[in-house]
Image 1: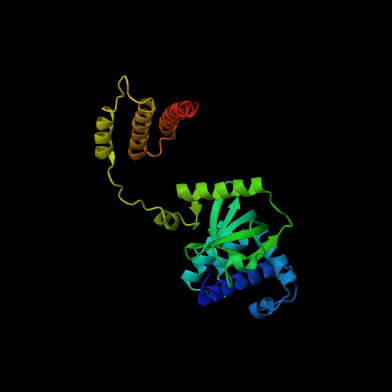
Image 2: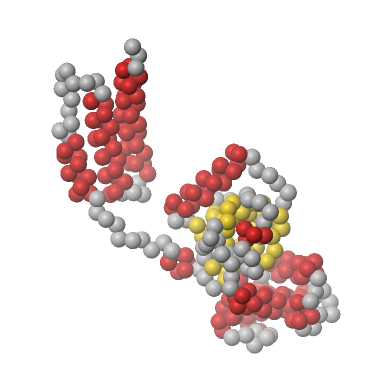
Length: 270
């Protein structure tokens, strides 16, 4: 995903205005008197101003307070939100339709592109880079600069990165907004179906699964797998966040399954 043309224009209008203000305060590139002149600077010169701005985030407060360009409150709020910027090294693990996955430490971000989708501007993934992430109208974007590092990743690291993403996806931990309210919107839980009565009924029926003398040897371990699996399913349905109890129940399923394997191996012995 990328911003709309109107959103991109708004972003750069505000960012150039803020950086021009920072340049005047810090005198990084002398002689620049208008935003238009600042916008016409070479990329390296803008980069120096941009880096200085993030080293002096108090300038954002000064800009909002003085409002040198007469911005409306909605636009000032966007600039004000940039105090929440996240600067650091990230690995772009994959590019999805909704956003690109940026992994920084144990945090996983869903980042939207500007003019282009991020997957179209990085040469490959995983891609290691330095970037500044910014809030923008309920989304997370980068500020237009991705400083790539020359680094390749082995199969082991790629697997770990994939697992970091998959865990964040499974747990609803992908950060898609720096605004708490916006982030929570994506975590609204649907009303869960109550599986407990059905599982209790299955557990009662499963108690009847008892092998007798003379029955095939596979019956007893197979029935144990059924009972242990129902118990595991009930804990998952009743208390899905209780990993301690889930692991205990899962171990019982594993033990029952190993007994099945033993019987099956013996069946093939002769």
